[in-house]
Length: 154
Length: 384
Image (cartoon, rainbow over all chains, first blue to last red; front, side, top):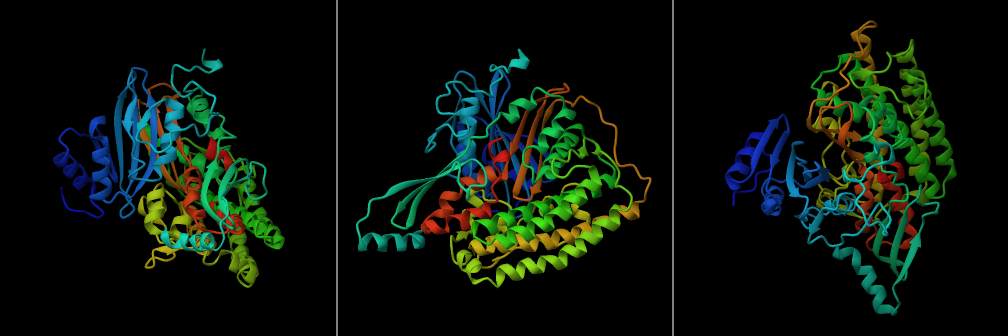
């Protein structure tokens, strides 16, 4: 593993991530923003690397997007030393919506993952407590999926 | 973590008490909204906490998928009535980024002024709430009185006190009104003097200070890892402010110092998390003065709004902004139509309140209102 780099630049981030994880594709690099796509099998390893070696201490957002043919988990991960953000997309198939939980790396991801599970039905493996948070416990459907229509959308 | 458990363990040795869950809320004066805090107590000390939110969940994000872009702006105001300006600013900024347009300079500075007025009035609302939580009604009244002057500025700028509906995709709705610069400078200068009355009232009150000092320490690492953002994190030694380190609009063109407490110690208590907001209000006054000067330098007839297309090209983008309460993010997925495919709001309090277990660990049950007042609770944006 590479050494710890505090406050890496965007070019360093994309270069190091490409070197350490050849399966990752860098989608675009802007000022203070790196957008990467990561296969879900290695998403947890990548997050550990981003946290430990690239000093991204703060996980701002974990959320889901329903593209109808597949779903996507989005991680927005922030660096407090230079304001850099990594936008990491992980595709999950509709018939097996599982991805590894990152709440053991960033405690702040805990509630975001619970919210994503209850609204999209994406299961975060090894999450300490995957229960409904905003919606009532009796709900048996996932309201933010596109298959769940509002009355005005019907 | 281990230090804070010491009194709990000592108490356990002295007498063998059963642990008990105490449920605060959803209707409780400390909660400032509908949410529940379940506390597991061992005698006087808290050993576990479990916040429960969601009573106000109205499917905000799903609702936006059904509206065109312009009609979402009034909805963003309703996320939080204290931070309505910053949320509509954030939304417009995110859509502008997706459209790839650069708004006029004047609009950027007007947005800065509006944001900072919003920040001051939001912090004053928080100060009023802290006053009542800690039993000092004078602080409440004085803070609310000061806040009213800033709401009047909102009225002068856009006609509404709280749900302003002012920023637009491509700029702002209207230019500054006549004599707005004079009024805002007067208000700010008045406020900078009047604020000291409140500060003396609080800092000279030993009751107020002793209820906050030395209670609920949070380290820098805890804050970063648990996702505590905003003034609370800067009080605990995290030297980060999105306005300075990840600037948006024209924040990189105004000079301001970000107040950070305990930069070396890297650990802060409730009093630090309180003090930082007071300092931030003075900083906001500075920013307002500079931005008003820049607006005057740009001149009267400069453009303040661009015409923008109604359809947003397909793609994903996100905007990030320093809300009065912390880090706000909107993540937008557009599909080329005039309605968003998905709009995710990252509310700072949603994550801050999830830290309440760490904040309440080992404190006495009587200190809970003082500690959780520093979250500055707002349920509209937490539950969305």
